[in-house]
Amino acid sequence: MLVRDIMHTEVKTATADTTIREVAVLMCFNKISGVPVVGRDNGIVGVISEKDILRAMYPRVDEYMQDGRPDFENLEGQYRDILNLGVRDLMTTKVYSVAPDDPILKAASIMSAYQIRRIPVAVGNRLVGIVSIGDVHKAIFKNNLDLPAARQREARAPALRLAV
Image 1 (cartoon, rainbow, N blue to C red):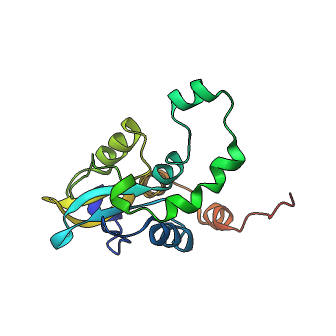
Image 2 (cartoon, helix red, strand yellow):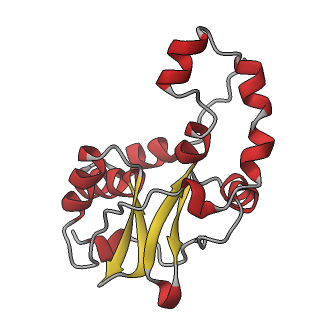
């Protein structure tokens, strides 16, 4: 199975000039954990993720060693300051990508090796889609499961909502 068979072509993106506030809203309302950062002609220049944003709040190791136990309540309050930064300030610029004609297991192996949850699909450096580890997982299992029709319906049945 190829990446083109499972990739999403309607991709939410950001630019380097987008604010962290705008990208955080985009991720929250669309229930996604990161987006490619694009420049001219949809060229990929980076990726911004929830992890990049939250990492900006963490104390650096030298700060932790110098100050002892950090004040996590205060660090959480600094989130407002981070929201005013630009994506260029926090984005990851080393971007791994796959091509539409690559096997989906290549995408899975890159995501696994570099501990990333989504990978841009590019032709040259131009963004044409995106694939998540969940997309690969679903495609592999859907393609390899041989369930009778009744069990397939059962597998699609809604899960019970548990009270917490």
